[in-house]
Amino acid sequence: MNAEVAMFWVQEAMKTAMLLATPLLGAALAVGLMVSLFQAVTSMQEMTLSFIPKILIVALVLLLFSPWMLQILTDFATHALQFIPNVSH
Image 1 (tube, rainbow, N blue to C red):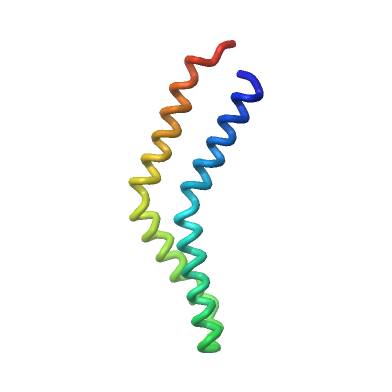
Image 2 (image 1 turned 180 degrees about the vertical axis):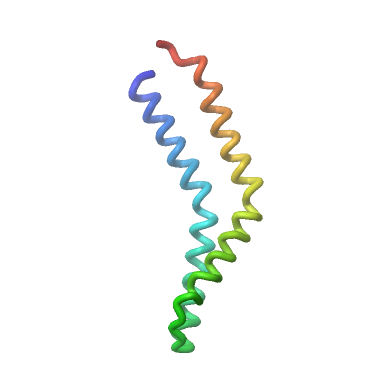
């Protein structure tokens, strides 16, 4: 395996990781923004108010998107494992 092939697989792994993290981080960002806006409007500064909705939404998004995420991971692993016999020593 040469450096170009290794860099290709590193790039593919990074792309896959970013693709899988995007829905979770996006949901956490949106909920965090709404909770922060709510806290600013109501002058309510409860610390747990910002964490509990984020945890619930991220868990819900993970539950909803887990089949898609599993499919993406399975495709990546399949491509990586199919490449192994093609590697010349």
